[in-house]
Amino acid sequence: MNSEENPQGEEHPKGEEPESVTPPAADTGSGNAEPEQTRPERPRTEQARPEQAHSEQPEAEEPEPAQQTGRQRLVAVLWPPRVSRAQLIVALLLFVLGLGLAIQVRSNSDNSALRGARQEDLVRILDELDNRTQRLEDEKQRLEDQRTELENSSDQAEEARKQTVQKEQQLGILAGTVAAQGPGITLTVQDPSGTVESDMLLDAIQELRAAGAEAIQVNDIRVVADTYFTGTGADIEVDGKPVKAPYRFKVIGKPQDLEPALNIPGGVVQTLEKEQATATVARSQKIVVDALRPAKRPDYARSSAQ
Image: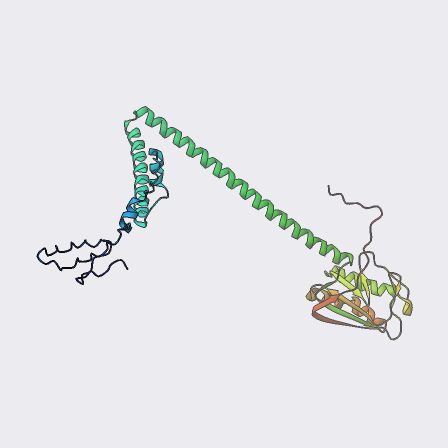
């Protein structure tokens, strides 16, 4: 324990040494007095207080901060930028305002330059503007003419292509290389006695062509420009191919012209009736001529078109 009770029962605080008690003086009057025994003093021990121990320890020296240059301090202040939304809006408004002012100043400068120009300079500027406008108008007209020419050329090429296809079809019909259909008539010749001659059938073909027939088919044979008829009775041939009665002519053309051409007095119908044959003509709005002839390449004739 750091403290002990003295004979009087008092406590001494910790760390303080008890004061020594001086013994009372011996009574000199009484010879019998016994000498009072003194209490042995406690050896003093110095105890270091915590405050004193702490204060006695050497304090660590703090390092001094490195000094920055002016540029480093400026960079530390400006970067990273700390921009708020309000600052951005203000900056944008200032930019727009500055741009508008610059445009206005430039416009005013141009106007001021024109106001301060001499009359001769103004006349020269107007002449240059007129010349430039005229050149632009001429260029515009030239480009429009080129466009019109190209459009016309394209239209002409398309029209030429259409005409070529149409002409090819027409020539194919006449040559018998393509099928055809349209209004016309059907001529049916019955020959029960076998008295019909090949020249009678050829006369019928000639009458039909003269009346405007565009496509003719006899039974299954296509009639073209070089078609010929041979034989008599039951041995009639068309282009070297035998045909048998009844002879059926399918003719494309104008029915109002084809039928009268066969029924004229002394015509095909009356001639066949004299030979004990019968001829029947029927009009139709759709006659199909589908017999074809192979295309032939001419041996000597060549196109004269360059």
